[in-house]
Amino acid sequence: MRFSRNVGFIPSWIAMNEESTKHEATHLPVLPHSGKVEQSKQEVAADGPKSAEGGAGTVLPQGALEEKLLEGRIIAALKTVYDPEIPVDIYELGLIYKIEIDAEKSVTIRMTLTAPACPVAGTLPGEVERKVEEVEGVKSAKVDLVWDPPWSREMMSESAMLALGMF
Image (cartoon, rainbow, N blue to C red; front, side, top):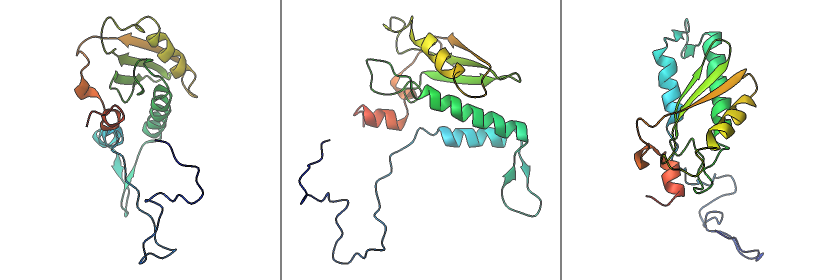
């Protein structure tokens, strides 16, 4: 989408109607997310967080919190890796099946490709390893390329489908 450089142009989402005041917030559409935040919350809950005494919320053991923060940094690094033929990162495409972090902070990534004959089959796993090894706190990274279950469009996040015009 291109925006006009015409000074008199005001996009409709910025323009205020007669009943609006300067203090009202403009509501912008929210794009769907991949659901990974909820998945992480459920995983933490399944690990048995302790209820805080006398208050709402939960208290995570320090190790679990540090591991979730490291996993978040790893996911952020994975979201910078793209299949050159598809304008969506490999994480949102659903190519990452599992991220394992051991006690020594060595990371194993179980991932797949869109097809066994993918042109980047020889280079993408190495790029993923390098990106993950660059993450602060990661000692080493290893990629296990798997074909079961085979990748399908249903593995993509909603935001990936939206970006590819599949809605």
